[in-house]
Image 1 (cartoon, rainbow, N blue to C red):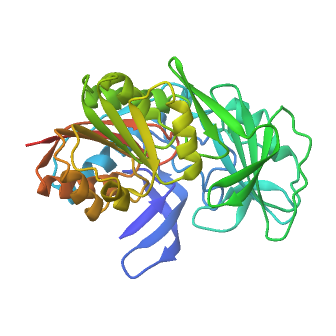
Image 2: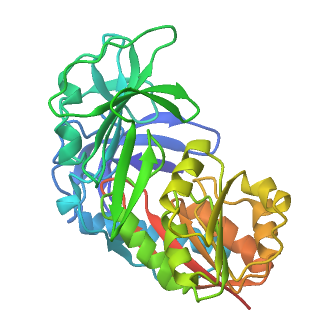
Length: 390
């Protein structure tokens, strides 16, 4: 089997093998002999074989990219979960032509301090002077225009609340010289393991979703597409249908986006219990939910914290795990709560489908599914599934 990057289905290409394993080959399409109708000239000059590894599908129209993602999700559901379903990947507002959407951009730095992006499956760096999928407020900082001596990586963040921040990751035993930037921004020092300390400004960003503002410290997790947080919140609540008086769990709750919506739904007579492993996110979530006393957030890994806090039942459960998914042990523990519905948010169709198969063994059926193009120009796709107890 050969996986050919920079090609599209139906094309005839000349491919150069870039990696060989015992089970498959990886290759780059270095010459297109017969192009697919959906092929376009990549808008970014750094896209292409051997160049920047950040974007997968700059050579396809946005519509074709979504069709490809539909095929990927459908294939994973069929192969790993035995589920046959037609998939529609929905466009997320805020990314015209698939560009200008990424509000958090991680640059790698050369020893000289020049910034760029890793090449595909490589430690080599493609130096860039601009990124077309970066949000305009990220590009306004002008990070790529300067050298960052002593830096290993630089993350530039632009929040929907109007804040900008630069998170500096130094090389071992090095200090970083921060240039004068083109736009005002907080500057934070990355201390590893998700910990940051402010060097300039507060180190706190604010993200607005509807009428609510969420505090996010440092480089804490938040959806990178400007329209994704509200889109996913609406989808989760439409599936969860929280009712007054219900008992809801929000697992891997981050800074409390879904917990806030659930808490408003269950009302003062209900309760929401959130679990999150990152200490800074827990502090942010507690701050973000302080006007909702029915919501409680504790720190812990789901694998052990449900037992530690003696959680034995729930009316509904929302899960938003990392790319590695839930895993069999967590699936079994969640299924033991006997919730009438589980809403599963996933950024990886393979682990999502795998977990669905295990949930099916415990009596949960996939009742509905939506998929969103929250990462245009890349192969990534966000799924939200509703599982009901049979």
